[in-house]
Amino acid sequence: MHANRDLVTGFLKNKLKFRGFVISDWLGIDKITSPPHANYSYSVEAGVGAGIDMIMVSNFTEFIDVLIYQVKHNIIPISRIDDAVKRILRVKVVMGFFENPMADYSLVNQLRSQEHRELAREAVRKTLVLLKNGESADKPLLPLPKKATKILVSGIHADNLGYQCGGWTITWQGLGGNDLTSGTTALQAIKNTVDPTTRVVYSENPDSDFVKSNKFSFAIVVVGEPSYAETFGDSLNLTLSEPGPRAIYNVCGAVKCVVVVISGRPVVMQPYLSSINALVVAWLPGTEGQGVADVLFGDYGFTGKLARTWFKTVDQLPMNVGDPHYDPLFPFGFGLTTKPTEG
Picture: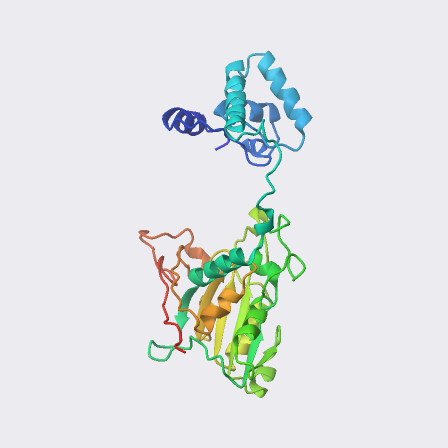
């Protein structure tokens, strides 16, 4: 796309009459060649010539030197530079950037306000997708009872705010653990929600003997992927992080369990599905893990639907609705529903 003049200039700017400016991805023009930066002079010519108006670079002196050389030698016409400058200035003028160049802090006291957190919690409730609920419709596991003798919470994602938030959260790749920001983990949310007489036992990665010997009423296993952004999240297997699978086998093999998946995308679930009583995908619920417990324990019903086809194996990918080989684990738009618990 960084070298696609037909789309950037021909379609976006000329046909659609786009009056803003086009910015490259970070080091995007470098990747016009393979390997990246192999012919930087060509990359500058192709990217700027395609209609990119502002370039994100690491070595700006190199870029400026190459660009000036190409303009002086009529490789890039000055009219292309004029177009880029005009577009950038127009946007800044419309924004009032020259009159008020500094940020407006008048609303900064609303950041992380209770009202905003409640809205985020509502978003979590509405985007949870229930993929399995008991072996049959007449024997559902969810919603869970708040009053139980003793329940088990396990999985490395159960008490991990960083994993709930994912990448691009305060730091580029995000972080694991609970030092990234403040909020409510799934574990804390469960403790907040159950009856005061219910004992909540947290064991991140219990063995099956521990589970069998403790006579738990039921278990909640929270598993998923670590935080990532961009290429660092590239995966050829799309599997749950260890020891998540082990926790599913050890816990769900010994007691009734609901598995909650924390992930920004579908992951391989087929090998575990038969041992799981209920399966919920929570995506990346962010700081408001309370929204997960709100629905698990029936204060609200499940209403979310899959916005993406959930595959059986990565060998099927790419797979989309309408493909001849469409054979998903859960189809696009799938999502079981529950009613809120009365009382």
